[in-house]
Length: 245
Length: 321
Image (tube, rainbow over all chains, first blue to last red; front, side, top):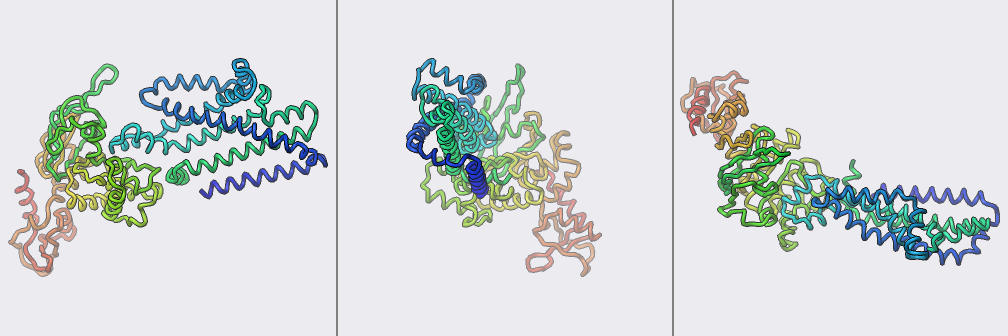
């Protein structure tokens, strides 16, 4: 617990230091020029967040049951094929995925969300699957020996014990997702990518930076929120057990 | 009472079959501890796990208090049987209280009843409920965890317990302590217990009956005294060890073996209590190079004498049943 607090604190300090360094390095007047874009930033941030959260949450909702399904004994021998299929999906560069999504679904919000969803899916499925398989067999045996049925065993024993691995997958997945959202602009998804790409094309540094800093801020906020959420979702006993090692 | 009738398990591995347990017949009386003993791979664990169907029997029946358990479904059956394994298997995500209450919760007991029960059970193994109920397994030592593992199996007051090398992972000193605690507890709770072990000393200490297994067969099923005094074949003889006569000494107390005839009365004869084990008495005789010990009752009055001869007389007298 205190470990997490400390690591969060360190994260903030590092960020503040980078920000301070950054401000001291840019040309004077840039900050004022950036403030000119604050309405764009607030509008596009909403779009940006929407892209990340809708695709991310949809991925969580699909990926966890999929990972659970793969880990069931009756499905396990096919699970590796399924994972290979998803692995191939993960090797495709995100830009190519966006392009393919556009080829099938056209431009706009929907194809962007779909591509982001696909990108986010794999790490969560994989970690759910691996996390559940890592629950030691004696714990399965005890749960069965005490008279739990399969559903009770999954909900009371397997998922809580796999939760820290699952959450690691969710954080990785969201990092990938949030890193890809700015490019979704290229297929008409909107978001802060608009400011970044326009800024680059027009050689307008304040515009570019306004978009980039906001993008960075959203990424950090999402990661920290997930960190806090994991504190709620990972059972205290599991956190104590892992802290002990 | 647990009764196994022609219980058999045949595993099919890559085309050829392995009989892990071959027509096991035995009957354990209510309130007794039966230790299933043998080298690894002998079928003792398979036999134990067929009772709660963690391993499905190939054929044969298990009766608990006369009821044919094949009529029950798996979860019903298991909730009626306490189960303790070597790895303890406390669930790290649950508090000690919730761990103990797993089966009562599955059975739908009211919360206040099950939580009260958890508190009583912790008291039983000398773990202060106010301190331990809300802790997590990771915050307990190995010995404390195993105590919780044992009382968890008692939570729903199942009449029957299966224990698979329950004290195997505990260091020797604490193992002795936990074994003693468990025997004291058993004197009150009188569960019918199947207990797997590969340790002859543990078996002699814990068992009312010992079942010796080898290669999937039940070779001998008898009291510890009978097994040590009259091993049924050479395998058992070598398994229980050449010192089996010495092991028998711990099965008897001084009061059974004493005689009224002192060799020669002398004030300096060392004294020993009536409830001491013959093992300790013999150790004293040799350590003090004494010919006899004076047996004293609680009021320190001499009630008899223990001599080398009276000990061996007692061993001989008890060697036939």
